[in-house]
Structures are given as C-alpha cells and as structure tokens.
Length: 151
Image (cartoon, helix red, strand yellow):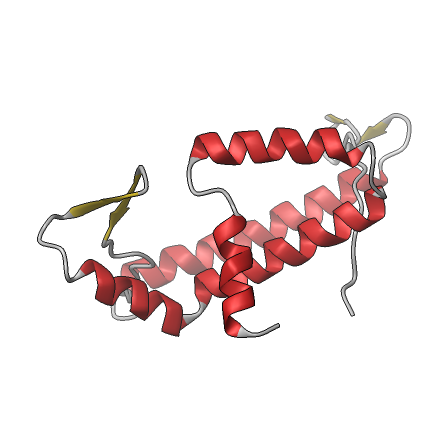
C-alpha cells in the first residue's frame, strides 16, 4: 500500500463523534452479513495501527507543528477541538527521606496484601485465622472475551 492509498483509507474513517456513532452502528449491523472472525481481526489490526500512529513521535511533532501556526489556544478542526497540552508530567522525589520511608512501608503492606489475597483465593469451606475470625473466600468473576495473536 503506497502513501496515498494509506491516507485515503484514513480519510474514509469518521472525523466526529456523530460519524463514529453512525460508523459503529453500521459495522454492528453489517457484522451479521460478514464473518465475525474477519471483523474481530480487522478491529484489532485497526486498533493497534491507530495506537502506533498516535504514539509515533514524528506524527505527534507534525501535529504540534501545525498547531503552532494558529494563534488560538484551542484550534477547531472539522467540528473537533485540538489543544496543545502537557501530558505525562513526572516528578522525581528521590531526595525526600520521609517519602522513601513511607514508600518502603507501603511496599511492605503491598506484600502482605498480596499474600492475604493469595490465601483467600485458596479458602474452601469454613476457615478461621489466628485471631478466630472467619475467613471468607475470594469471589471470582470474569468476562468471556476473545484474544487475538497477530502474525
């Protein structure tokens, strides 16, 4: 697929929430006429492709460069709003002794919590802990979904 074909495919995608909702409805309706595995495959491939494009630093830089051409803080484009934003802000607390102590305490508590959770997963029937308190087993729940391994 050459560059123009790839851009043409992107241009076919929805550009607003309303268009997304219409597209979603159409895909769901047409799913009845197509192979569900093919639809699941395409959805996963499109999702991973879009995530990769969104994270690509070259593309991010192109969008940011374009935004600098506008004087407005919020740029309206095709009914949507673009805004330059600081994301992923991080702070380094390495120099604070009190925070280091609190973090060590938290890690010790996290280990105890994990141990207790592992124990409660194994509880069957009536079990009491060392203090005579009844231990209730962990209640397991899950959702059935599909997993796709792309090759």
